[in-house]
Image (cartoon, rainbow, N blue to C red; front, side):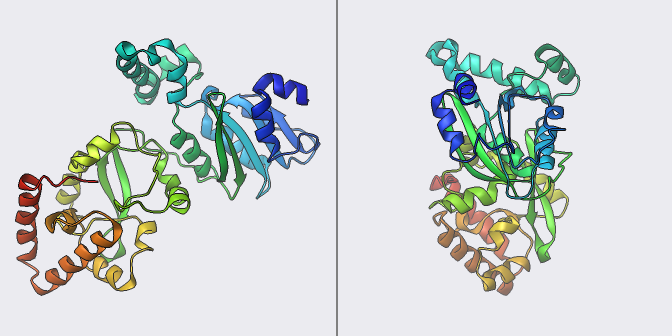
Length: 344
């Protein structure tokens, strides 16, 4: 078996996978398949599964991961591999040529990422490709794994493929409506602790929401107040965020009465846990807004500065409930226009 694995994946990949599973164990299931039915009816109790076929070639990725989850006990290891679109582009001569790189990237993105998500084009795409060589990001694959009940142990790029080791941590969430479109609804905590769905232009890869705890636990927060080393961002995400263009759809939240133009930013439940108790109570008493206090007060965007600006704003808001937002709106306009304030 060892010789066959080395021929299939290479010496480095075999050495890496061997760190997590024992190939000589009869309860280790080693496969190279894209069909979830090949996981069934293997007689012996399966304690670990290794699949050397790329995730990119699996037609129904989540169903495959769910089938793996079903075969394993909690804490058991599953290992697989995938090719990121960055690695795939490096292998193609057009992706390495400056003149053609951008055109090639746009065409490949539209065909392999947009078409599979559009009604009417989806069937044509899968009829032509049979679901093979799909364009996937690291964030999407890892996010799908977490969504399907796995905890990320480690991953490593070897020979243009990313090999991952995950362990079963629970049951799949069976997310039947994952967000793929250009506008994403983020679950956030609004006034009185009510969950609202904040509209934004997508700046992260699909399934990134499932990786928030992983990214924060691994890297913590950067000086900007956002998760450090956040690989979930798309190539265009930083540009949209820098000029707050990703937040334009939040005008819909204002029309729905869930947010206002000026106010503390709506945050995730995970982020809310890291806020001091007294500030958390103040935050929950007010409706969140689109333009945050740290912009109006021209503060830095690190966690301490943002929370200090929120505290100043909230205390003023309680003392002057009607005039505070108007003053902060004009302050923010001045800071953005004349002091060139930009998002981190």
